[in-house]
Image (cartoon, rainbow over all chains, first blue to last red; front, top):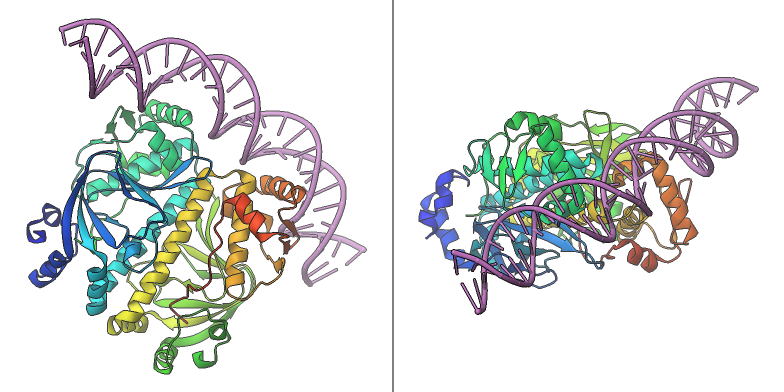
Length: 240
Length: 240
DNA sequence: CGTAATCTTGACCAACGTCAATGTTCGTGG
DNA sequence: CCACGAACATTGACGTTGGTCAAGATTACG
């Protein structure tokens, strides 16, 4: 199955020989498809499964006691979900599908065993994790120091750039299936103020988000405005 | 040297046998002591060294082109610095000493080699890294969703709790050698507004930060107010 | 004792949140 | 095909939170 995975052809993952691919294939339990809105992982539950996003968009988020929600990250095809399950411990965050989503379900215990058996594989995971930390740091800067408009711009272009590196966005346009409230919960603003920021960004022709259709006339200009450093290609991911 | 390290006696690290400790000892290059204000790591430089905080406080931060600064994390004794050097790649953030700091300097290449040789060790690193990610997520929630007072309270009690787990804070009081501006740069506020928040927290007897002396009369109450989940002890770190 | 850095506070202003009203899209049942 | 309702987008008016400016107080240190 993994041998023919469409995502592999996008050069999204570290080059692997046939044996490695087959080993990963052996960890694969099943393929899961869920409609938009489904809770894939619920905070506090002790899962033994790791997922790989295959298609669709999802968010990792945290719900506060007062009902407000912070989106921690947007999950795109190729991303790994719930890696904390490998190193035993309950997941602290929830994951919800934004669109229809399909995932590869991996056996956490087998994945753990594979890490112990193959240090190179474990180091790949560690590197992917360090990359994630880098992105998390950048988001921290965004939330702590950027204006509302710059935050929205940053959020949007970060996702656009991730899609582009995966060969899933080419020109100036790309789909953006988030509601305004989702954006607000990601960048720490209110839904209404996100609207104002979008209007401002459109007025400056930095980006145009109408409905679910995103247009970025000049990626470099938006990146400069939002303080986003466009990632050079070449970084690959650890798990198929 | 590491065999007698004072930090080891605090049960801060995973239990190791003598051979493991000696292996880590072999990676140790030197011991570095720097005065307050020193730049330990400079963003963009390609270091081949990893550090372990031995004594003192430091911050990991990012400087924006407009001059403002976001503190990403406070580094306390026992914390690992610049782990990105292990998996090759330039460090993206800077580290500066807040107080006089002393560090163990480890050879990044040897550390890398040790990860490849010992998968258990590599997995320990991965777990520490996943714990860090969890803390990063929590800080993201703080910046995105909490009020100014709650943010300051969160920031303070998180550090207090980390110190406590390391046996470096016991009663209600603990030293807190940050300037108001440092706190502001960490929680995404202005220096003046941090003052207002501190006054408010003092008025509610949630905490009292006067000068560099912190007093938390009721840790659980402050934690509840700030939405901080006090960590159960037991999590240990990977590198000595 | 003097200078520089930081703390602390008040007054005022800008950014962002809340409320409420209207428009738009889309799915559902008649 | 159309009527209806639900969810979401969009906008204006207004209130609150947090930033900026500026001044005096305190501390650290030579």
